[in-house]
Image 1 (cartoon, rainbow, N blue to C red):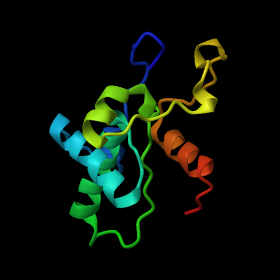
Image 2: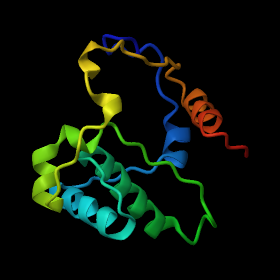
Image 3: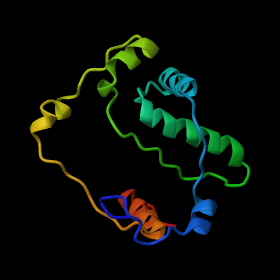
Image 4: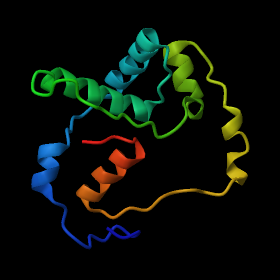
Amino acid sequence: MDEKGNILKPADMETMRKEIWSVSITDEQTRKTIKEAYDTYAVVLEPHGAVGWAGLMDYLKSESSAIPDPLCVSLETAHPAKFPQEIMKILSIDPELPKSLQGIEEKPELFEEISNNYGDFKKYLLKKFNYEL
């Protein structure tokens, strides 16, 4: 896919269906996940990351017997301080904006580009997290 959303090459749907778990998470489940992660692990998730975490927990419950000791990655897309009202409502805490994010509007945007090939994406994640099969 290019930067305008035009599909240049069809996705390998067969591989993706075998290797990607997909689930819908409601707003209520998202809030519950933020609360449970905080109460259980003392981790403050932001709403988007909580959706990923809830999906991972659903996956582990559904597939736990099929895959012994799986390596799992759950990604956050923002800092909880980006959602102070929601975090305050759920956890009764005001997440402090970390020093590293203060003045972020003036910092240059950094990103990496990868192809839209699922195999390349998988290799990127494995390399990024120093995981060997």
